[in-house]
Length: 173
Image 1 (spheres, rainbow, N blue to C red):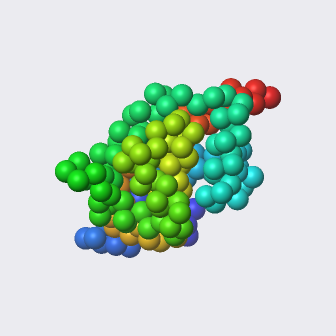
Image 2 (cartoon, rainbow, N blue to C red):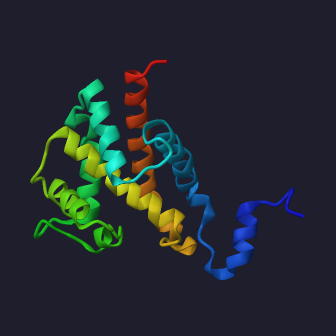
């Protein structure tokens, strides 16, 4: 029955008029693959905030991170999550739904450019990716709204590919 099913058609049928534009979610599907690679290779298949921080610290010890290599990602995050009028995080940042206050505060400090070193910037960006991942895979992001999140995942994918390329350079086996 499901052997020849087109998933896009099935979802469109399931949600009817509320179905998202599934032509615009390829990067969200790719995120699942890239996150799997990141979590498997760098986080021992068990990503969480402390493990992500440890993995990035270890990577930085192998290949020192250069903050300018992450300007595109930081600029995007600041533009999306910080109100330029008052330098405060906005509603979209709050929708990331950070669970740990210390992590949320740390990410806010990086986005406000109160902390600017490369290691902290990369950690903060990956904490955002981790929230995107959790919100996606734990049903917080409604499937009917996924097409509105495409831009987040485009940059998250590019960031994960950058991190994985650095990991491969540091571990050329």
